[in-house]
Image 1: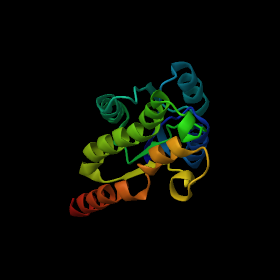
Image 2: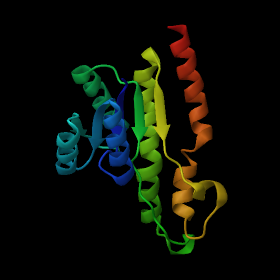
Image 3: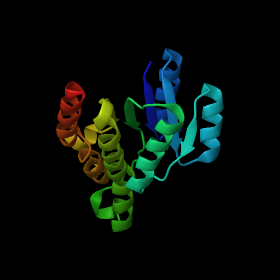
Length: 170
């Protein structure tokens, strides 16, 4: 079975995904910021876990490389890190907007950057979550639409093509 690194593993989407993949028999590496929640999920699923600082690309890459060193090659990375700010643009402060971008968009970039470096050798998959708000426009979702729109289909296409080419040529 595949070994998958799940970032944001203790959130609703991340923990649900981790439970489903674990039931299926996949080997996981659970990654997140809350040591206590990670320990609980790690014990529940009998899967390894590590704390990671998603605000630094280097930290994300180090977490993936350390996971591979300790547990073997990773075939997939999933970014379940996210937040949602429901406010109209005129009521959203610059700080709130930056925090929304940092949490949602930068974490996706950090996972893609780490994945491109690690999966280049053996190929694999990277999964990012977007939002319908980025595509259709929903009132009071301006900040999250901007952040999630940055990690929708189009930015991943060059990476998918690069990983496919690399895995086909090895």
